[in-house]
Image 1 (cartoon, rainbow, N blue to C red):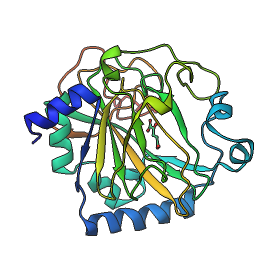
Image 2: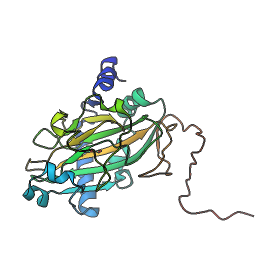
Image 3: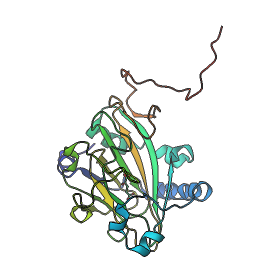
Image 4: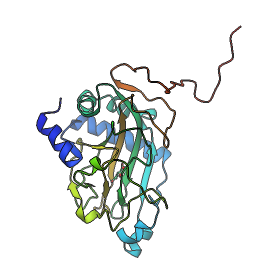
Length: 265
Ligand SMILES: O=C(O)CCC(=O)C(=O)O
C-alpha cells in the first residue's frame, strides 16, 4: 500500500501524512456523528495540565484554553466504527508495523476556537507503554489544521530514540528546554487526511487560534505481538482490523471484562 518513498520518509522523519484517506462524503458523516457525540456526551475542559503550560501560553491564554476529549468513538457512532477498519488506512499501518494490526484505542482531541489548548512535546509511550515500537498512532483530521490552527508538530528522527523519561507532573511531557516545540517540523493537513507516527515519536501542537474548532481523532494501532506493559486500556482486547489474532504468550483475550461467568454443571 505504501510506496518505498513513503516508508523511507517515515523512517527518516518519524511521521507520515496520508492524503485523502477519507473522501468528502465520509468526512461529512464522521463530522456530523462526531458533533452529535460531542453535544450529547462531552463537557469542554482545560486540556492537559502541568508546568509546561507557563512556557506555551500567555497568562490570559492559560485561563481561556479549552479542549474537548472523549474515548472510543466507535462505541457511539457507525461512521467511526467503519473508519477504524478503513482498508487503505489499516493496510498502510500494516506496511509499517504489521502484518496483523489490532486497534488499541480511539481518542478525540477537539481544540476550541481561538483558545484551543496546545499539547507539549511528548511521546505517547508513557500513556500506554508497550514492549517495543510496533505501535502507530493515526490522527484522522476531521477539520483542516495548519500553523495557526494548531496542527501537529514532530521532531525529525525522534522515534529512533526509543522510550524517554518524561516529567510526570500533570500529563506526561518532556522538558520544554531540551525538546523545544520551535525545533519541530509542522505537519499541516486537510480534512480526510491521516497522519501516522510511532509510539516513540516526539510530537506536540500549538494553540488553535483560528475562529473554528480543530477536531482530530487518534486511532492507536498495534501489532498484536507487541505486549502492553501498562497504562490506558491495559488488558483490554482490541478489534483485529487486519489479519486474524495470533496467540501471544501472556496475552489473555478477556471478552468477559470483569465479570466471571458461572460454571455450568
Ligand atoms: O491533538 C493534538 O494536537 C496533539 C495530539 C497528541 O499529542 C496525541 O494524540 O498524542
